[in-house]
Image 1 (tube, helix red, strand yellow):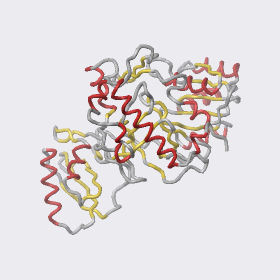
Image 2 (cartoon, helix red, strand yellow; image 1 turned 45 degrees about the vertical axis):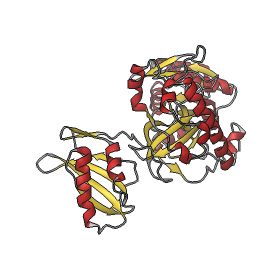
Image 3 (spheres, one colour; image 1 turned 180 degrees about the vertical axis):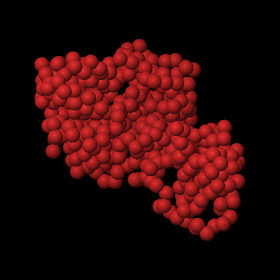
Image 4 (cartoon, helix red, strand yellow; image 1 turned 120 degrees about the horizontal axis):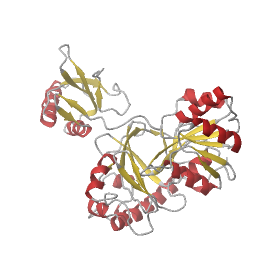
Length: 412
């Protein structure tokens, strides 16, 4: 097997010890260079955080909080280093959320994902991610050049001109969204343009349907996907085995119950929380708002890091019921007050008269506990100021999809 470096095949225990050592250093660095983190982690010593259990006791920073934090303390909400020279560029994502560029020639660590997708030194990479406002284009660009590839910055749009350039330059690899790859290939068929030089692709920013992967495979293009954000850079990537996404060596990933910071058991769907080891933007327990789950074991490709199932939806399931907002954190608080409930799912629909209706579905060990239902009804009213019904289920009967609030109301 061919690997980017020896970090990818470390014994998992060796990796975990190394990550915990790096985490201790990163926490102390974060307190020093990022004022908001200094306040948030006041009283926390990095050297006391020696395990994932210790890490799980630290507070979360939610991506949804960034616009407010950045308005209060521009430009980065006090979460990044502002030392002159540490930041090369500033990017803007919808929100708006501003993100810094830093961390060296491959600060977003994309070379590893490109290598796993088959990109090699000397390849010409046709990069169709945008170079404007968001950092996606630069993420791939820096990783490809760190790998020794040549980059053509195609960007988005102007499909016919893109096809003309592909026919003349003959790039081996594509980087961009899966939907734009599909558009290019379908337009190439219409124009009888030659895109046969493309044999590999790294896609991100959208879900990759298996039907599209198969369609591209029939054209001779092997498509790999990766999971990244503008704040964190690369989080996880697909390898030759195509069995889940392998976590990058530069981050620590937790999966937590939505609305809380509590890790869920392996295999259970929850919110992706990431701690990055980037010293310039040292996000600690950054809640992405995305859902995923940890896959057991290691990849058949030989890489030994943790694997996740990939993007499985959004964790922010806030709903408005009878004029009141109901948040996942409130559902978590209801369950916290009743430890005999293993898992809960608040379903919102409409009754026959068209009125909003809430039903809390609960998994419990003792479904005969008649008093529990009445207690839960009261707790729901205390926490949400709304009435709800309660339905009890046996353990394992609720779907494992990470949803704590399911809104079934139609708005068509």
